[in-house]
Length: 229
Image (cartoon, rainbow, N blue to C red; front, side, top):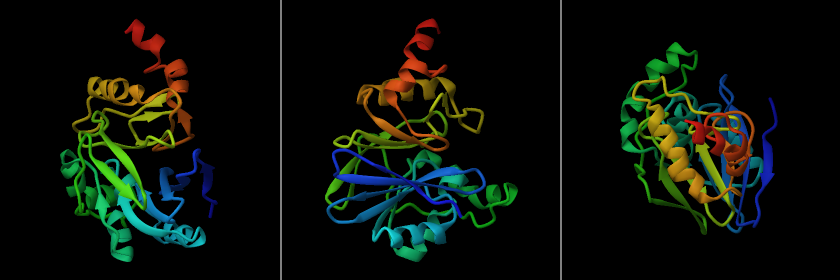
């Protein structure tokens, strides 16, 4: 069992660690309020018993389950985690309901039979605020990869969990049902870039990066690439 990798965030209002889950190695992220030790699990795609063990090892109390979008590798374990913990599920945006409805079928097709549909305790929309302990995160609706994709942003810590909107060196796929390439580019440039080049982000897969690094080098959404489009 691979160890979860951890990253300290400055200033230390929050901390986060990344625990890749499912055969697709989706970056499930556990964030917590330093003062209260209350945690949120962002995108529990699976391996719920392992995620609960990490929470226990870190002496954290699970307060929230947050979902960026309803693809099974991001949300397939949300129902099981809620049942085990009683924590409410917040997100995604209601436009991802059709992905939730097809969760079990997708899980069977992709070899993840434990994936189940869930009922969000709270749907999220652009401009919403979600709380965690004594901290809060801003919510941005960033469609394109899926129509109901949201991003979680902690302004003080300059930290975002962006799901499958943006990756180090790439962007989210738009060839799934109701994906939209133009909408995805608009979400990245119109919602993420204004937050600042210094923002560190955890993508849905692979390594952590910063918005500034992607504006300089990402072949899809760098300033230079967009200027040539």
